[in-house]
Each structure stands twice: as C-alpha cells, then as structure tokens.
Image (cartoon, rainbow, N blue to C red; front, side, top):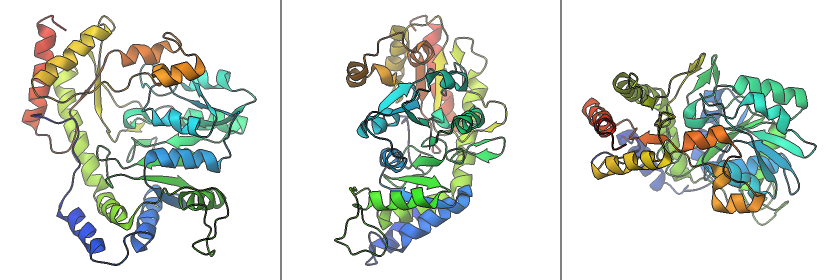
Length: 374
C-alpha cells in the first residue's frame, strides 16, 4: 500500500522505555503495571484503573464483575466492532441491540428505554469513532432505572462531552490500545471505575482468580490470564505522556480531510457534535442515501487499486452470520445502523499522514465519484 489505513505513533521515548524494562528482571507484574494504572486513572480523574491484555478482555471482565450471566440481557449497539457484542455473549448473556442515531451513529438514547426488560442487567454503549454524543443522556436514563453502564470507550481516549471525559460516564469504562488507537501498548486495554469492589474483582479475574495477600497457587474464584506485561505497560506510559500531542496531530489530519471533503454533496463527513471535543479514532465518510452497497464497494475497490488502504467500518454486528443465527436477526431489524453500514468508507487516518497524502486520498475519492462509476 502507498497509504496505509492506520499506523502507530512510536518515537525514541517509547523504544527507550521498553528497552529499560527488557534490561530489568521485571517483565510482568512489575512496577510498570502499577505506574501505568495509576497514571491512567489520574488522567481520567477516576479512582482505579486495571490494565488487561485487550479491550475485549476488559469488556468481558467488566461484565463479569457486574454479575452478568446466562439468562441476562445487556443493551448495546449493532453498529460497532464485534467485541462489544461478543463480550456479552461470552458471559452467556444476550446482546439486546438498539438502533443508532443516524447522525452520530452512537446508540440512540431515545430508543434505549423501550428495550429495557426484567432481564436487563446493564447497558453497554459505545463511543463510536471517538464520539461521546448522547452519553450524558444515557447516564441519566440508566440512573433512573438503576442500571449500571459498562462504557465502551475503546475508540475515544481523549474525547470529551461538555468537558466530561470519555471513560467517566460508566460504572465501569473500558479502553483499548491496539496499534490503530490513539495510544498503543501493542495489544492491551484498561478498565476504569470509581468502585473499589469492582476494581478488586477485575484485578482478581485478570490474574487467574488470585486475591491480594494470597499465595501464587491460591485461587479464590474462576479467573483468566488477561494480564498486561510490564513491557506493554512501559510502552503505554510513554504513549500516555504524549497523548495531548497525538490527539492534536490527529485532529489536524481530520481538519485537512474536512477542508477537502465537507463541500461534496455526495458525501456525509463526520463532524463534531455540539459540546463535543473529538479525539478522532478513524475518519469515516459515508456516501449519501442515493448510493448502494455495491457502489460503495466499488469505491473501496477503486481506492485500493490506487494503493490506498481503506475499510468498511462497521458491518452491522447483528448480521454477522453467527450472531444472526444465534438470535434470529434479519436485514431490516435496525434500519439506521444497516443504512449507515452500507455506505461507510474509512479513509487512511494516522499521525504520519502528510497534507499531500490527504489531498491524494481525497482527490482520488472525488475523482472516482466524478466518473459516475461510483
């Protein structure tokens, strides 16, 4: 590929931090783990942070800590990365999907209340593409019904809504550090909460069910090896120290795309909603309503032919074959999510893009649309 969809932002500071750990005897469960957790909790203003080996693991442990189990339902969105739903399925519970707001593409707060049943155990909303729009309304509604929120902030580190940071709306909130995220640990995730009991449960569950003060071979509960090594934590610490710089650079790249594409009436470009400060995870445009799935796929193919890496973020989760089969979902169940998914184009987006790169991508996209082949 000439222009890649995503690239991590790694400097000599990150490399030196990782090498320092490699030269030490503490590769796992060492001091960098606690340092990373404490620094992350401090950044968000939350009481506790628990590092894990992926955002998926974080979501699953959060659900386990909340007591979600077989027979329960957890309300979530059909327009997200599949882990938001599969983490629910892994507990034996059912993901109860609610359609999205057609503008923000987040779960529609106005539709959630109608989906609450006696089996509803929690709400798992996602800040899609880094946008926290509607999360204040979701928090208010959940509080009225006495339901915990497991906030999927895996795409939203650095975003705010009316000054309140993404990752502070949930009873528990989860971040992910895959290399395409705002910061990376290679692989990794973080659970944050203000509840010491929930945090202690997550600490135990990530470490084979061990508890503080017990021996290495003493296991109080069924647990998992979802630990994050000190190597990963050292990388995360160095990245977290640069978060403001990275977010600013990503916002600059987004502004270049907006300048070039905002006036094209064939495209719906992402915009910051009222009260939002967006820490852009990806830059996803949509073709307007007149375009079909086949035409969108032709655009993806044309950009790929020009060695521009692109993606279809996101296919509807409820129509993934194994999920549709498990719960009987069919096309048309969630019309807003499905309509958006048929026309999305994730453009290359990372800090190493130049203004010329963005101009080439935008120009190639518009040129293909101009031919009428799209």
